[in-house]
Structure formats: C-alpha cells, structure tokens
Amino acid sequence: MTRSLFALIAAAGLLTGTVSARSKHPSEQTTPPLTRIYVDDTTGDVHLVDSTGKDILVRKWTEAVSDPKIASDRMTAGWLLEERAGTSYTVPQAIAIYRSDKVVRTFIPSDWPMIIAWAFFASGKQVGFSSSALHGAESERRSYELHDVQTGRILERWDGQHSGKSPAWVQQLNDVEQRRRR
Image 1 (spheres, rainbow, N blue to C red):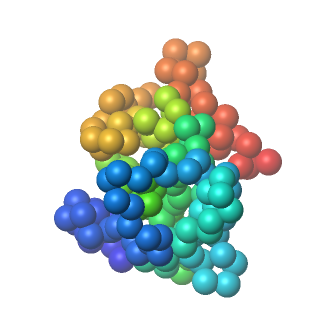
Image 2 (cartoon, rainbow, N blue to C red):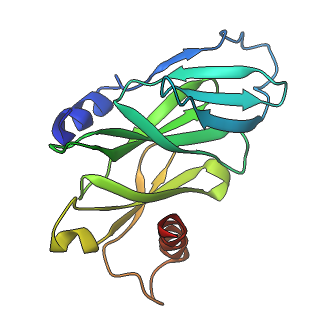
C-alpha cells in the first residue's frame, strides 16, 4: 500500500480494524483498565488484556504490526502499522490508537514515510512520534509531531535537530529511539 493510499484510507476513516469485543450499552460501567498488549506471533493480530483477564482481539488490517504500547491511563493503547513502501520489507508508516473497545484514530507522519519512534504523552491524551526518510542522507534527519488523540490535531511540530533547545517531548522520543538501537 503506498503512503498516499494509506493516508487516503486513514482520512476516510476506513482504517479501523475489526475488534472482537461485545458492544457496551451506555448504562454499563466504563471499560476495565488494560493490563497487557501483545502481537500474536502466528497471525500478527493485536491482543489486549484487561484487568478482568478478558483477551480482546484486534485483527490486523495491514501487512504487519509492531511496537505495541499501553498509555499510563491504562485505557488507551497503540501500535505501529507496517506496509511495504516500495521495499522488500515492511516499514512502520502509521500508528493505530485503541480506546473504548475500538481503534479510534490512525496517525500518519506529515513529512517522512517512516516512523522511527513513538510514545504516549499526557496519560494517553497525546501521541508523539518522529519520522524520517527510508534511505540516504535524508534518513538521518528527523521530523517530530505531537498530536491530540481525541481530535487528531497537531499540537506541536519540531523539525530542528534534537538539542538542549528541543521540547521535552522531543527529548523523550529521542530517548525511545536510542533505547531501541541498543
């Protein structure tokens, strides 16, 4: 799936995944907190486990998924969506965000096709990520974005080099990238 097709599908709201969890009536209590997230090695599907032990299956709808995380609010989770980007291997190109028994939003970088690192901020209310080019000299550059999960709106951007002048959330994303390289 090309980057532009990926963006078109996400913008149209079609990138929502299939969740095998029963619907909740509005009068029922809120969703139990999430305790675990993992990707099934055989199917590539995402599994979320809540505090009652219930395993919630989210079927993959891209070629691969990776780097699953649960936000500190224990109600929000996310993972990278990977597709081939004109390459023989999959590349992380979007982030799926799960909340309230469904995928609620998908984020695609504005500038570069590949997500390098990502993290939740503000107890799951925000998601930030860094992106870059796939190859060449441009692959050393980073573009950073911080988004509101509920609205999808970009809250901040940082296109400068990571330095002592960069915002704290950029430093945290740089730390995530450094930990992944070890």
